[in-house]
Length: 196
Length: 71
View 1 (tube, chains in turn green, cyan):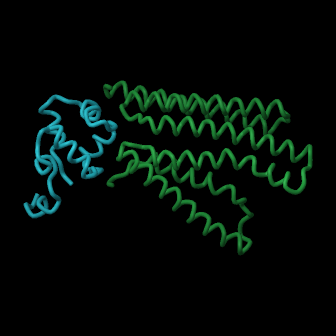
View 2 (cartoon, one colour):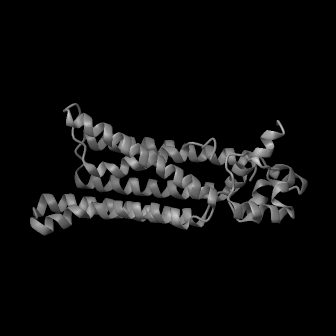
View 3 (tube, chains in turn yellow, red):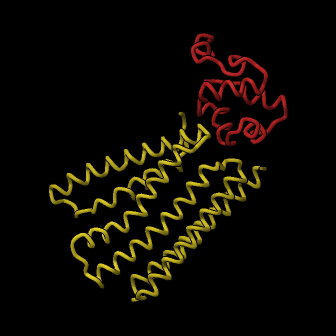
């Protein structure tokens, strides 16, 4: 692929990310400042799902065009999309059932576990990517990014934990572990490693 | 670890993508190896050398030799 085409593809992808971020920010602001009810929440979830799908597709197309696509990454993307959808459905179901049905005992535990299913599927997808990636350089980058994500999580959790212990910061729920790990992983994936 | 990948590729008029396709790796991998950002595993280094019909030391330079020659 010519460098001019690659630059154009990069610009198109960046424009898509910015456009979708703006629309989502407007949607989020509308949800915060106006009571849009369940219809608004579902609409927002559909919007997020549609945008996530288009971003995944655009990212995949870009990788294919630049000769950097791997089948393992394609499977990873599809697993993450499925896991994201399961997470959203699980979370909404758990919140609705908790508020409306007020379950107790085992049913309450089962209900509270529902949002975890999608997140654990994401963890599974990350593990499968490392196992299935046949391109050794790509695998090397994924491992480095995962270690960076883990380091980020351990560092922030330790510091925040002690701050919390001394009543300096509010409590953060432990489900934040995966998003923090994913943020570290994402940051590392976007940073070009200077040397292996 | 230094290598002659860029020269060998240019001699055959191959792009990074062409070489990546022949090796069955991503273009990003070829670029990383070529620019010295990533040292390939021994099996991949052998595959590269075999593709060019050369011995491995004719493609990759030992880091210790590289230093002792005062490059």
